[in-house]
Structures are given as C-alpha cells and as structure tokens.
Length: 102
Image (cartoon, rainbow, N blue to C red; front, side, top):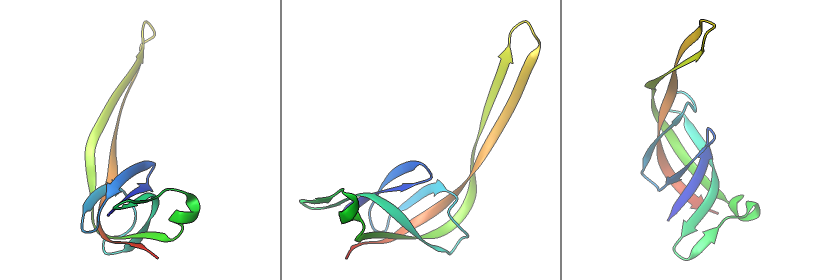
C-alpha cells in the first residue's frame, strides 16, 4: 500500500514508516496531514476527488534544516549590468506515520 501526496508544489510517493524531505510544514514535533493525489492498495486504485476524500495521510515533523545553496548570475552584455544571487530553502524531515482509507 502506498500513496502519492502533494505538498509544496511537488508530489511524493510515500508508504507508512517512510521519511521524506519537503518544504517547511511546521515546527518539529507537529502532526501534519498531507493531501493525497493517488492511493494504491494491491489492485485497488483510488484517484478521483470523491474517493480520495476518504483517504488520510498523516505524518510527524522530525526536524527542520536548510537545504543546499543555489546560486545564480544574470548579466546583460555591453551595459555593465550584473547581478549575483543565492537561495537556501528551509526543509522539513517528515515521517509518514500512517495511511488510512476510511
């Protein structure tokens, strides 16, 4: 049994007991509920919005940390326009506690 969940504009395939790194969701120790996009249990596949309303995917935020630094540089030739920028995303490690259909 697994589910595909959506958070932070990305989708992740998760099973119970798995840990994933997602964009910041809350304080460490907080319980979160993730939005399912797909639920698969053997031959049973749930994908419509009505069927997925019954599926819940719960997790617990274990910790927060900063991701790798991404740097960029833009310029326009012959005009001396240059800009250097960087970004570090705050990530959360989430443990999927259970996936229930009920």
